[in-house]
Image (cartoon, rainbow, N blue to C red; front, side):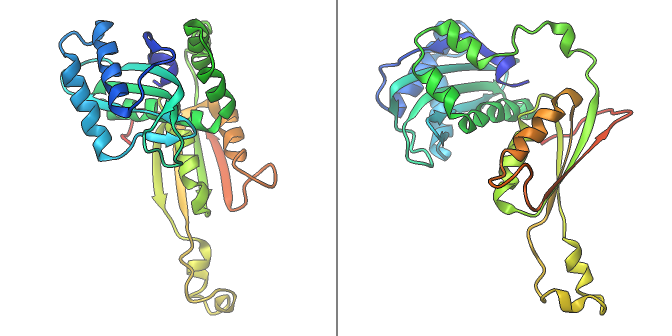
Length: 270
């Protein structure tokens, strides 16, 4: 589940002439209806749903990306598409930049986990400026589709019977926590839990032998991300986490451990 498996080629439109956020939301609604993807809805209904979500908070995530989206009861599939704009659309993004790539997601209300995975897989593009610039300036629909779905045509047998592994990432740096969580949430089929923890100094301070080494306030940031993912993704996940480091091959105050799993069953919600 993610952008690779859900992007609909029929829902890609290049070089939109829309100039405002409302116009682009109307264009998305009309495009979805025109393709016949959601025959039971009309463009006005879809526009209202997208507009209501946008009014809650902006879906402009910065770096030239916006991801307008909504959930609907009574549908059984995701509709994921893209509209590009060379001049950009003002989505009131958090970094103040106009959105040149406007991805959109319309999904079943009861499939929250899958919706989050698709959002995360698109959101991580904001970390890859080269892809954003390439797609923004590309005039070929086929080329855009290939860039955004690089694994789409890999033989299916390579992705069957994938083993699982479990990550435990111990994080004492608040500034990288959300980035690391996003890396895991974008993984297809990932099961993720976050635990609020305390560093050992919190407890050692109460022991007379060690009390002089810590101040009275030892409530430093400390969380653990536990995630079960496909083993084939582990090297890429480690690489992406370590890319968050500014000064070396690993991140200070972040420790990664990985275990092979003999057996897994069931799943957990985000």
